[in-house]
Image (cartoon, rainbow, N blue to C red; front, top):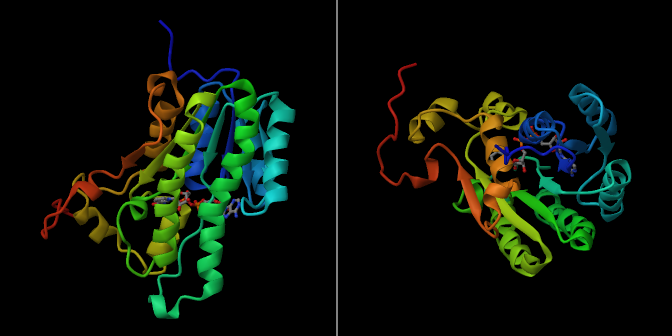
Length: 263
Ligand SMILES: NC(=O)c1ccc[n+]([C@@H]2O[C@H](COP(=O)([O-])OP(=O)(O)OC[C@H]3O[C@@H](n4cnc5c(N)ncnc54)[C@H](O)[C@@H]3O)[C@@H](O)[C@H]2O)c1
């Protein structure tokens, strides 16, 4: 029987691929036979991660908000693997958690540049290759902040809502070009980004667990599993949608705790 999540021979480019959700995606696609290009801000970290995956994978440094770097990342993928089947837009950084009146324009702009403009630039450049072959999948990482407001995270909330809108626009734009574009909206995932916010006291893991019907923070692998599905032929008619991976967090509307936490 054919395995629909077999990606042998395919080329997958993952931004933010050196850490957290992007790194889980890199491992997941590599384990299923894909050639992975790990792209991240720091070149040495990206290439180190690629060698951890083993032969047949590459790493490259680059800032997704810089158009010349975006061009280099996509070009290097096609040059190395001869194709580009899947683009995963995972690069991201946290918001300041300050009241809006204290948010600097510079930080606001950086968040928009990386999350929203970076996703746009990467998708636009990747689509040039994908349209040529009338085949491709683009996965954008939104957030629960892409469907709901997170106070003190105005730029992050705006950028992640923007990613949802952009995903729908691109899916409709490229529907007849063989390119599917979907977003994933993760809840609270235990990654270095979230661990850092917990350590800084900006997030409380126990409060999050109580607020989550499934009673736990998620793992990066939970998000990678949704990516495998969306990139596979199982999802061949799914485009322009947002798949929520949050343990029920955004489904919950009661004022009470959603889960009983013992520890
Ligand atoms: N962790 C969560 O709970 C969670 C929830 C929802 C959405 N997300 C989103 O998932 C994505 C990945 O987050 P994570 O938690 O894995 O974070 P992470 O910090 O572990 O990884 C993010 C990676 O992106 C890279 N990066 C940052 N800016 C970049 C840029 N301009 N160009 C290229 N690479 C850049 C970083 O170097 C890092 O390796 C982000 O978009 C984040 O907003 C995370």
